[in-house]
Structure formats: C-alpha cells, structure tokens
Amino acid sequence: MDNTNGSLLNFKGYNLLKSFVDIEKLEKMEDFEIRDDDVFIVTYPKSGTIWAQQILSSIYFEGHRNSTENTRTVERAPFFEYNKCKLDYVKMPSPRIFSSHLPYYLVPKGLKSKKAKIVYLYRNPKDVLISFFHFSKFTRIIEATYTIEHYLDNFLDGKVHGSRWFDHIRGWYEHRHDFNIMFLSYEEMKKDLRSSVLKICSFLEKDLSEEDVITVVRQATFQTMKSDPRANYEQIINYKFGVNKKEGTFMRKGTIGDWKLHLTVEQNERFDMIFKKNMKNFPLKFIWDINED
Ligand code: A3P
Image (cartoon, rainbow, N blue to C red):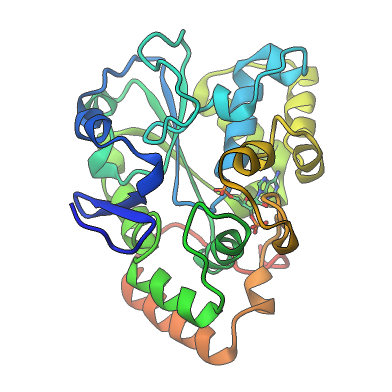
C-alpha cells in the first residue's frame, strides 16, 4: 500500500479515499459473505451512483418509495467499502443493497456465484471528469484542484479516487461473464428514465405496479432528489466533512455534454486520443451529447 496523493490510499493497485477506509476491513472485503438476494450498484465515481441508489431503494422499499420512512438513501444502499454510516452489514436484513466503486478484482468472491445481482452504471468519461473536477472544489473529501488542466492529467493517469476510468469499465466489462451483471448508462437514464427503471426492474425481477413505477420515476428525477435531503448527500457531506457552498452543490447539473463548456479544443483532442487508444473494440456505446441518439 502506498499514498498516491494526500487524500488517496492505494490498495492492491486501486485508489480509495484514505479518510474513509478501515484497512482491516479492506483486507477482509473479498471474503465478505454474499447472499443470493444481495444487489450491488457498481460505478466509477461521479457516474450517477446516488441516482442508482435512489432508484434501487425506491424499487425495493415501499417506505422509501412513498416517503413514509425517514431513512436516507445512503443508508438504504450504503457504500460497501466505505461504511461511513457504521451499519452492521452482516446483520442487515435481506434484501441488502450495496453501492461500490470497487474494480471487479476487489469485490467479494461470493459475487461470482452469479446469484447476487450487479447493476453497473457508466457515464461518458468527459462528463465524469467535469463532475469530478467540480466535486473536488465543492467538498474537502478529495483534494481540491483548481484547474481543469491539472485535473485532466490526474484523471487520465488514474491519480484520482477510483484510479483509471478506462481500467474500471474495461475490467468489469471483460469479466462480465463471471458475474450476474447488467450494464446501463447514465445517458440512457437521462434520456428515458421510465424505460431505464423498467429495465432495472426486469433485471432485478421486481414486478412493480404501474402506480409504483410512476412513483419510482418521480422520486428519481433530478429536481426531486435535489430538493429531498434524504436523497442527496448534501447534509451528510456537510456535517461530516464541510462543503464549499460557493462551489455549488452535490446535485450540480445532472446533464449530458457539460464537458463542452469546460474542455478546450486541445484538451478535448488529447482526451479523444487517449480514449481511442484505451477503448479500442469496446462495444458499449457512449453518448457525449444530449442531441445524440
Ligand atoms: P454532475 O456533477 O454532472 O451534475 P455520483 O453520485 O456518482 O457522485 O454522481 C454524481 C453526478 O450524478 C452529479 O453529476 C449529479 O448531479 C448526477 N445526478 C445525480 N442524480 C441525478 C439525477 N436524478 N438526474 C441526473 N443526474 C443526476
């Protein structure tokens, strides 16, 4: 283990948030006992994790869907490797939903029995980069970087939380046959939230009524989540780490193609070159612009 930068801890080749982890638990992660009805939401950071957490929590828990229970989404679908809410994962009743940014090779081995399900949500990496950049300025969780240029270099080199985006998605995709996994894109969800919710329900074998589907979709819109303190991380981040309100909010823009407003032509060309080199023959489709099909 070594430090990649002040806020990161490199564990077996993967960068985690140093202040969030318990080394002893990290060492035992791969042997954590998985139940057949567990569900994992897996994402590279800033790909819409909170969105998937909200959708799955509303699908699984009626009280969450109908707002009759005052449980925060982050406790309904807690982070597996970062147990900041200090929940007892072993005693948690089924069905358990976990969220994780881990690469395929660090998740519990029991996920390979193929019964427990994984929803892998991915987002075009230029928007991930911009979302990440703003997040670094907004919160003290990760080291602040004040220029996109600097952040771009770190992102492309994997010197960020989550390591290299290219390795994360490629690793999970190339090992997809080892897991019971569905891939879904942020952009698909943005363009047609209802169809995406139905796709997720079908994968999870959850047969919701039409009325419940409408409620899940309503609970997962950007505006609803932004205004619901249980659904966005703002209170918890502010309380535990402090935020820089001048730099915006956690639920920042939630759009496709924001990178166009931030990257210079040269930066964009550099990104494209590296993307092309690393994503050769990769079959998943990326949507870079809101007007693209
Ligand atoms: P932006 O910073 O581009 O706005 P994560 O939870 O993985 O950190 O991802 C956060 C990103 O997902 C933020 O992106 C946030 O606004 C976006 N997001 C969260 N909920 C969303 C929703 N309901 N609709 C669209 N985008 C959403």
